[in-house]
Image (tube, rainbow, N blue to C red; front, side):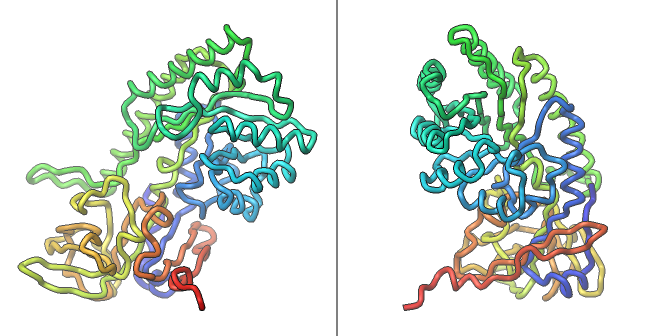
Length: 413
């Protein structure tokens, strides 16, 4: 649960800042917790968009990988992912790439269709290769994703016309940062009723239901009452207990539906957020208009917490001093700002620190999901940070060295 806690010297000598460290031990423990709580009948599909750097290191604890672009698929190829673990999703499937994938990997992959055009593309690609591939149809929830219910039903009604695909089930995505169990119950009952309708009216036996949960993950410290003090360890224990309760109650809802085929849950943030640490150094200090500011060598282009509005919420963090001392909190409050030329580059306002000095390092916890890919990484042509994986038995492993971003923002003439 506590994960990797490196010393100041380890970070300076082995990583430098800014840098990400993703703890594989914490990640695997998290996956085991999720699987043991949900039960053996439920499969786990890791949404690799949340953190592609861990792909290939968790094969033995995930059942599938959700792949949503050609780039993500190339990562799977390079990582040597077994293709029978790949679910090829994505709102846009490039025709040439799809044809190549079907021709190369044939029926090893589970394909998804998010539109009628995608369905026909996959079907025709399979026919061209004289094979039949398994496909699931994503039902829309009223946005640009998935297929309208009437179109989905029509594809199933006419399924015998399509010689290159075997429709094996339905895919449904709930949302992001969801913890309202009544919504889950309503959505699962809808999927259940749709599957029952397809069986009764069209003699279609769905073998699979893939459900994107969007489980809620808590990034920020709880608001404390006057005189109340909650330690990080206590907060992590509370969060873990709340996660287990959410999983147990969700499993109870799953047990109540009529569908008894294969159920796979697509999960990203909820799996991988807790394994990440982001390290950034204080490089400047100033006192402007009665406000203390600490400028760090990172910024909002590298650290992105879902729901981090106006930098008012405080994530869990540690302050690492050059003498080896480690602090959580303090009495010296400062606005911690990044190195971008925008007033929006605030990581935390009023962050409690202990005598902040130049070269102090701030470790931001729970940064394992999306920060390294979703933030505006190329703004101001700041270098991309190093990325490390960590295992207790093997130590640090460099996955990506510091990269000069100007090379991506300038074309030689």
